[in-house]
Length: 89
Ligand SMILES: [Zn+2]
Ligand SMILES: [Zn+2]
Image 1: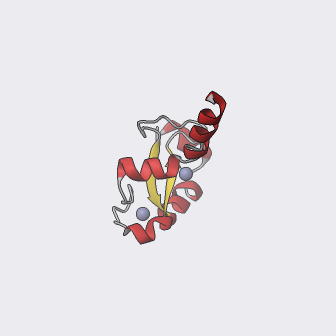
Image 2 (image 1 turned 90 degrees about the vertical axis):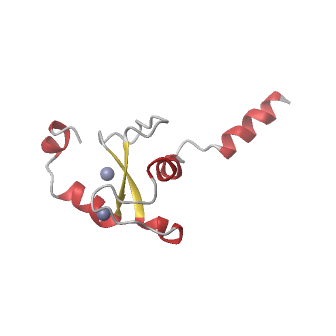
């Protein structure tokens, strides 16, 4: 019985649901260009990990930033990895 409950819990809370959590915490808005999105366009918003570590997913959302796909792309292409870590973003 206990095992079944545990399994159900794991199914309803997959480890990689941080995207939905981040959208819920930070809202459907790009943190960079401040563009707002309709729920139907939520797929255009992605979750950026501020420290670059995709395994660092604190439940309070402190390592997440909602970025639209364009800003997210820019965020990763224009900066060198050194800048990325040294400027604390
Ligand atoms: Zn944006
Ligand atoms: Zn990112």
